[in-house]
Length: 67
Image 1: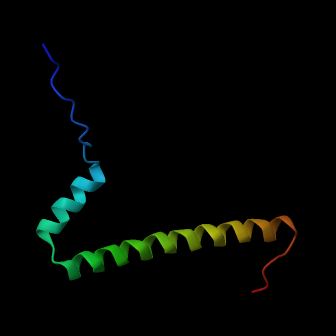
Image 2 (image 1 turned 180 degrees about the vertical axis):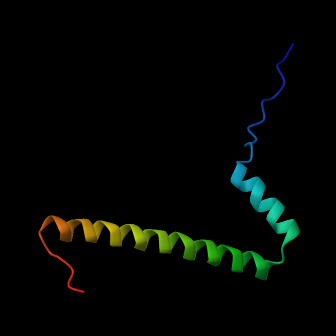
């Protein structure tokens, strides 16, 4: 008796599943716009984190903001 062949089929990730649903629901232009918007959100978050870090460093070296 011979064993059945094993199939190495990858289970799709959650992200892959979301992208599949997205492709069914949105046109390609809408997908691009959504991805661009999300990229902008991530970039804004990165810049905000950098600003906080720069402010912390400036305060540590004794630089005070003159208003």
